[in-house]
Structures are given as structure tokens and as C-alpha cells.
Length: 510
Image (tube, rainbow, N blue to C red; front, side):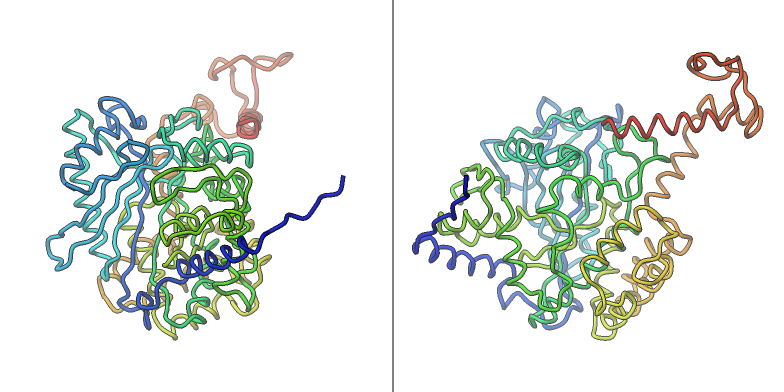
């Protein structure tokens, strides 16, 4: 049967045009909020954290007498009047933090993600140190609140929750939007439940330049740098049942890439010379928002409709347009700010170092020009950027992207950023990451090395220590039964190969 074109009325066309203008206002930000230079432009930082019980090492649930909801209620006493409710549940708090040694208080907003991750939004603030000190104050407040419900908590900064063997181990926060998101995304990708329940990231929010060409240029630079920064800030120890040594690099990005490519990852066309706010808005129009939250707090399912269909059916307020825009989840997003969403959850000072890196790279015409030349921005296209993602995942520190070794790119990015930072404290902060890159390790590599130092050796490894590499080993030294038809001995290399094949098969099945 022939597929008939959908009829759009004049009224819907007029509404679409009004809403398109509303979305563009949110994407580009108010003119008064945009800046003519980036130093010392105020920046914002969002730190996502898994909340574990320090005694058991397991995630803290949302509900229950000592759950995160109860902890938030205790924390709310500190943020009187700043409690955030949804569907009648307390899901966050917000307010201003006064920081000793800083003249201005720092805005803070704490909410709970689908998988009971804490999302701590800090800023904007002109000084990176203000954001880091605000995080330290909040952590003290949170631990005091948790003590009142007899819970000793630990905030874990990794890209994938290391305590989880499966996303089924997580009970999602019971909200209508979470039900709708989970039901829709479970049909779109292999790792959708992992993405929603088990991952955590770091988000940097920068004000956009007053000049539209410069604002677009910054977006294209960060889009090109996204795979590089993702690799350099990889901070995932394990995913599901993978042992750390077998967990793939940039695992969090693998999860999100397999979840819903139509809303996640690299924005198609963003490396073209003609890319601008309007092109980004047209891409958003094609995204399926899954749900819509009205100003009255009612959550509606939008099913398989695109944002464009939603824009035809009702006039959007500025707040509704902003919520609709945030249903798109690219690695670089325009949402009144320039938001870089590519980094894994990082320890606080490493997150601050990443802010310093980005601030320094975009600090002046000289540093931006040096960054352009380093990555060859004028010659890049979407396919080249996507290839950089694949190459870095597969080859790690041996990769060449944009015509250069990744090690050289890391060194030069750090050097350019350092030249662009006016504050000595921020140049020192940058070294929290750049010193790792100098010895060719990422935060993930440090996690794996620390795990290796403290874990108990397996029976197979103990046998290698006793008998030597490749030796013929008695089966009684090993766990499990020998393969059918074998004798009482087996070579170490065969054992290792069988274990590796078993782990790869287990990951594929899950």
C-alpha cells in the first residue's frame, strides 16, 4: 500500500515557526548572556557520581529507610526552600553555596539520575577553584546527611559503576519519565539499560561567544576534539562482568553509541562549513524526544513522534523548549551554553583540570588558531571524526588521528592550553591530567594499575609464578575440571587463551 504524505495545516505550520524561533533562542542563548572574550568567562561543571555504601561496597538504593531519597530529605534541611520534587517524590535540592575564601557564592543543583546516580551541577563561576571548593563543601554536607540515617557513603567517580554485574542489579528511580525512557530505549539499542542505569560522566558548560561565527567555530573545535578528550579522560575500570584488564577502552562511549545513535554521539553535518545554530536546530527537530514535560509538571509520552511533531501540536514556553532540547544527547550540545559531555565521571581535581584544558584552548585567537592547526580543522569532515573514535578505541596510545600520533596531540593540547591560561593556579591544576598523559596513561590506566596491585592472583597466575610462563602445569593447581579427553596436564598459554575466549563470549552474550 502506498504511503500517504502527512497533511500539515496552516495553523500547525505557524505554530512550528513560532516554536522553531523559541528553540533557536534556547540554543543560541540570550544575546546579553553571550560573551565577547572567554577569559575569565564563567564556567559550569556537572559531576556525576555513583553512591555506594562504604561498608558493603554496593550501590545505595533510592528508596528505603537509609536510601538516597531519605538522605536528600536530610540534605534538604541545609537547602531550605530548595527541594526539587517530581511525581510527588523528592529528587533533588538546589541553592547557593558560600565558600570560604571566595567572595561570591556558587550556585548548586543536585538531582538523581535514573540509576540513582547523583548529578551535581556547579556554577557558573569565573574561577575553577570556586567550583572545586564548592564540591568539597557539598561532599561534607552529603556525608553528614547520610550519617543521620546511619549510612556511611562513598561517592564513586567512574564511567561505569564498578560494583554492578548487570543493569538488572539497579532499581530505577520510580518516576514516570524514567518508565517512559526505559520502555522506549530498551527497543532501540543493545546497551540502553546500561547507559541509563550504569554510566556517569562529566559535563563542562561554557558561555557562547557573542559572534555567531566564533560560537560555531568553538562548537566545531570541540566536536573534533571530542574523541581525543574521550580517550584522554577514559575512566572506566570494568563494565558488567569484564575483568579490568579485559574491559574495552572508552567503554562508556561504546555503551552510548549502541543506545540510540539518532540522539547520541556526533551531530551529523557539524564539521561542514555551513553548520550553524539553524542546522543544529533542524537536527534536533528530527530527534524523538520520547517524553514531554509541561510547565505544570505533567509528563506525556510522545511515542515515536519527532520533536517537529511536538512543535506542531502546542506552543512551547521557554522552559518547555529547553526541556525538549535536552532530550538530544550529543557529545557537544548547544543549550544556552556550549556543553561538552564527552568525559567519563572524573575525580574532582581531574574534572577541574579538564575545565582548565578547554578554557585554555579557547582562551584567545592565538590558542584557537594553534588548536585548529594541530587537528587540521579546515580539512576535517564528519567521517574523519567518526574514524578517530574507532581508531582510539581500537589502538589506544598507539593510535594516529588527524594525521598525528595521539601522544603528540595530547602533549601539544596541554601546552597550548597552558599558554592560554592566565591564572597560575589553573596551569598547575591542568597538570592533574597532563602529567598522566606525559607518561602515556589515562585515568583508566591508573585504575587498572591500582586494581592489579591490590587484587589476589588467580590460580592460573599462581601456577605461572610457580612453574614459569608456558610450562606444563598439573591440573590440581587450577580451578575447574580438565577438558574432556585431556591428560592431567595443560600448557599455561592454552589456559590463558581459553579464559580470554570465555570472557569474550560472556560479554557478547550479555
